[in-house]
Length: 270
Image (cartoon, rainbow, N blue to C red; front, top):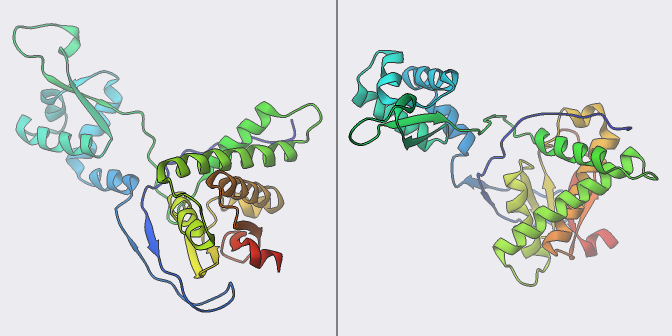
């Protein structure tokens, strides 16, 4: 196998931004404004853990390796059961814990079973700017596992990256049901998807989008030909899955930004 495995844990932000186009010609136009519509789940989860009591109970429940009652959680940090219930519900709302009713220690007693808490299996990671090392790791792992006898590791990586992108694009199209996509509608739909994955798309003109963040940094700096090629293949597949035939993903490396930009197919032809 010619590919090494890069393993990283992360969680994609679900924040979405609205971007406005400019009338300035050319791909390297003026500024654009955007506004967040929601706080990313990972940031909400970390914010919940800022409180010392919540953090203490969360740590206790994680290390217990079994369902924990409110009384036990409250005792672990020295507070009342009622106050513990308030903080535990905040941890549940943030997705860090799950709650259910069950006998503590497997011992059934008369009356209603108490509410118990367990940690979820969600990995939380916050990176500013956002990174997608888990996506890159998935692509490389799949490439290694599916590499053909007459295929190089690099070829397997590009094929796998394009397939991952196409699958994502097909899912997004099925959810959005956008119908036939002209250039500007295709770019708008693509911007929403790429914002979720941390590319920070910026509509420079009605027919050109620059990607201001490289989700694969700093790995892209270590192996730019490989990682940028994977990125380009992934975005090409994404456009295929979206059926955005009027848009092309083009390699256009720019210092401090993503190596790919999205252009009208007509502009690319020219």
